Length: 399
Image 1 (cartoon, rainbow, N blue to C red):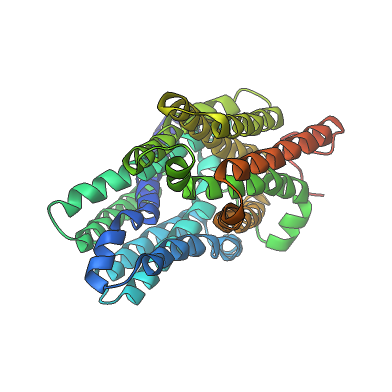
Image 2 (cartoon, rainbow, N blue to C red):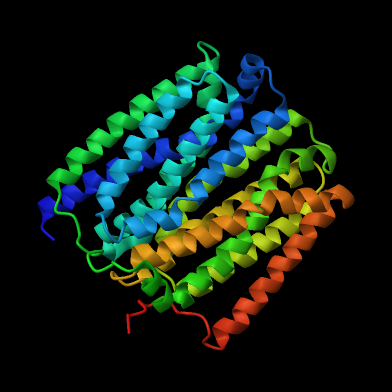
């Protein structure tokens, strides 16, 4: 690759990092707006809570359809379409006259995010195939910055204007970023790595070991993680005796700990064997979660909370690097979309599982049980790895 084209690909990558920030901002911007929604539309907390569920449902549903679309359309064109879709969905939400229109807007913003990740992650791995972990880590860092910054940004905007301005601004910056991405992709010589990825079902059949391994590791883990962080504030108040303000601050800190974790884990994934690293990070999450259930006092709870957030966020860039670097060009998008859909489906059940268990059991016991279940998964995976039943991470070539 020439130096000039490498520079142009860097510009494409920078545009993608900007776009993923706004894509994830759209997903997490609704929670800080519950109060204004309740005040304007005269609804209760249960009703506005539906918005968050629809955002994540929207993020999960388009993953396999997008994988199929990528067998017909170039990756960068699908990414551009998701940016345009996010722009339109944000403008629609800003114009919402009823809470039902907010529901639809949230769902559409979720759809744009789900389609974006399925198209963008394979494209990023192919822009710089010699350093997949590094670029996946940087891209994930940009995404995580949105999760940390959204509550603060939305809160600042609400201090000077109304909630609709949040979505008007999101529409404006998403549209501008999409335009910049269009210009940078036109100037760059983009990879043709996915040219042979034309049959979704066949790709999944060929790469079922990698797909199954990814779902087994991240599907179960994110089920626990999703249930844990959704109930963290209640858990910290009821089980650890913290104030609501302190609990919310620690929740923000837990996500903030993921910013350096994405950056560090992506680089580490380029240097060590994938499966041992994945199993080590998963074991670390089990230890941190288990330790948190025994922590008492503000200092111990804070340390355990931040450690849990940092360790679990190391898992996401590591497994993306493992899959995207291991999947061959002819199967990458299709197999990745199948993995992502399976993982997201399992993850969505996390809040329900913790909610049901915590009805009759104390939070500490619920999270210990989930930690033990994850520990059992680690043992099973270690045994499978030692028995050569797990893929090592080298590209699985089509047969």
